[in-house]
Image (cartoon, rainbow, N blue to C red; front, side, top):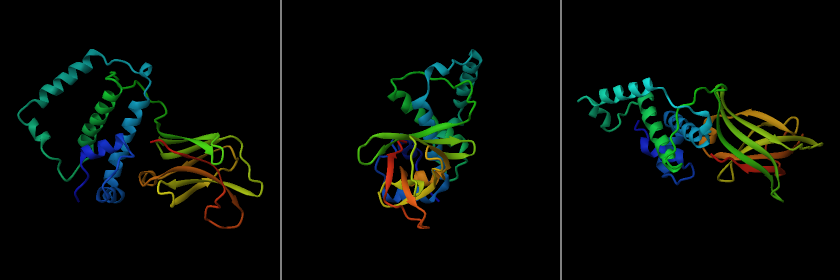
Length: 236
């Protein structure tokens, strides 16, 4: 199977809403490897874009020495083989490192060339992927927020709202596709205030990025009731 071009995935990671050729979109939907690579690049982009410069420290001289040594090693006659067209079989390690570096380079340019160093620690091991403001549909008043977070256990959707109530039923959290037609239920907002829901990355990658909370009746009907309380689109 021929996988998607590295540069294309890097560009898509930087601009998720850029138009995609239908054939490429079809491949991305079917290829788990390319989706995983895109997911990793998006995490890198999000980390760089939201990084606090005060949380970074410059590396000690020995790190620069190691980098210089590695660059000298790469300059050996065998190095040009790394510049040949990408092989069909991708291990993910070297390719991902190079592609992530490309994304970081582009983002750094957009940030005005500010130098960032690797953070000393990441205690939680979590990465904020996207956020959304949850607003009422009629008045547009913000009543809550949603966060898409990559954790060690997978991707989670975390919803927090002002107290919501549905005395005749329950509150359901949905992810609606950008086509405005398809949707999936991710769980109930049991206390009417907050909830954490596991979401497969493939669902997000396929355009289910609009968070919706609806009032549902106890009628055993799995369809959306049409009575939405708040809604907002995740900004990836």
